[in-house]
Image (cartoon, rainbow, N blue to C red):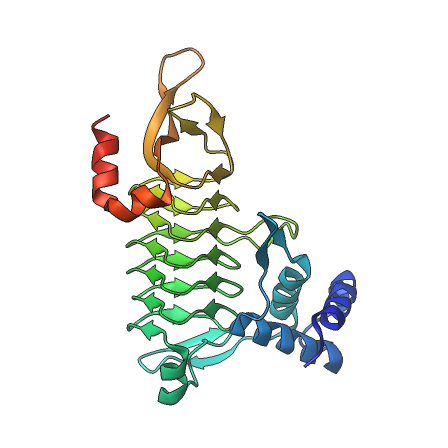
Length: 279
């Protein structure tokens, strides 16, 4: 296995000449490097984005590796047991033995699907759900029924993605931060967090909240409007803000309160949301 710096040099160079690459025109060295990148992503030894000194840093070259793998690999048969698939990316657990699954410590409920190149930490529960390539899911997280974790999305530890939640994938542009849910967050049923939005640690998102880069996030306590990031410890519900002429309302997400870790530890999610609705 090459060092990450060596892999990065190979991937960056190959990406610059990607137009000349195809499944039948791929140097063996590049094919091997791509396989190593996907293996390291799959194991969680490398991440598409990682926290450093209080901020998130995107490893663009790993996004390039994922994109190149799509370009140079052909579709092939994937046997799902009850059906068959035809794809360029194998399923993460397709060939895993019972001993390997036990050692991995992940509970995988039928019919959860995880593509190879996604990392799933021990003590994660995957209900029937979908996790895309390049994603990273921290320990103790619940991915509930019909939830989807998009390509390269980063999900922290002890997160609950409720039923039908959509966490958007972000592959391009390369420098764009993936969608990130930090540690100890609760994302309510049928909510959608997309386009590289970052939800700060300890936040509670009510059901049916939709947040993209252009969504206005109104902080009721301060009157400020944010975009692209939910501050840590926020309790967020769906709402509206008046249009410029006051004739109609436009959708927004509303931060109704801020809570610290101590409050979260003493108060259930339902209590936080009920108290938000009553104030």
